[in-house]
Length: 153
Image 1 (spheres, rainbow, N blue to C red):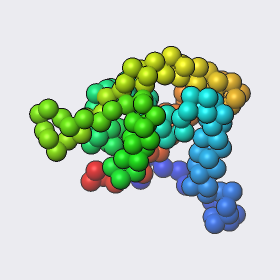
Image 2: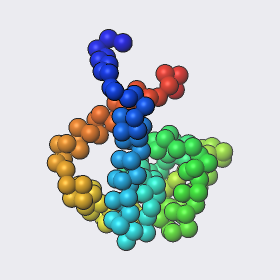
Image 3: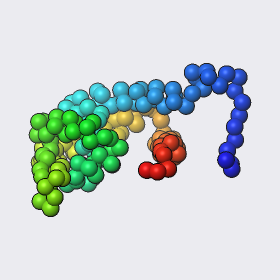
Image 4: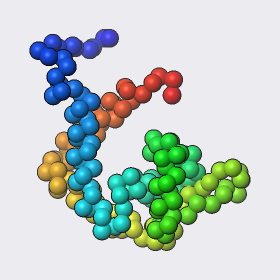
């Protein structure tokens, strides 16, 4: 590969050298920071991600929401059911396609957005990192995600 620099490490199977290990630990650790911030809102981290997508794009089909969140419909469906039971969203058959479910926020779901505006600054504060560092990290992770996806998608 052009522009790829491969460096030798003493033990290529060392746990500490594995990108997958660093990503897994970082993911679990950062998501754990969200728990006490989201708990007063009555949301889990996966539910928060659903709400973020809906606050930006609602109404949206379940299929499109699944694509946005990169979740299988079978994983997304229970999240939507719990959010619907909490009164934050509703799922309705599409007027144009009976096979499609459209997801829309309720007034309660829209109102929760005001409280959610406090989440990003709280997480930045808990991480203790500069916003510029986090923006750079996000860009790098986005590149990793794109590079790891199969070309046929």
